[in-house]
Image (cartoon, rainbow, N blue to C red; front, side, top):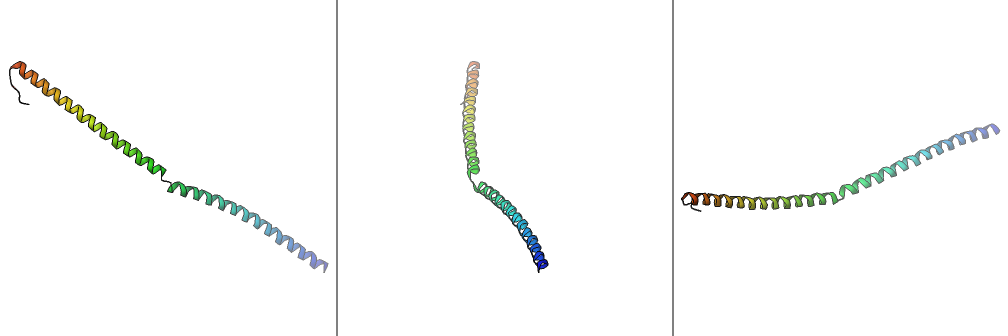
Length: 102
């Protein structure tokens, strides 16, 4: 009986040691799983965050506005240049005695 009791105690000790090891492994895996879940949640929320897209759209609108302003300035400068050329042509024609139609 003593031998059987000792054998059963030894098996119990081995089995409980296995359970302890498995419990420790389970705790580590659970910890890793929680870390991965939080990383995935963080990535998911950053992907659905529209702030970068809004900033890009605002930048594009600002660029379009700047291009429009530059086009207007270019048009005004071209107009002034054309007026100066016509005036110069008119002055040259008047000084040489030729009439120029505007």
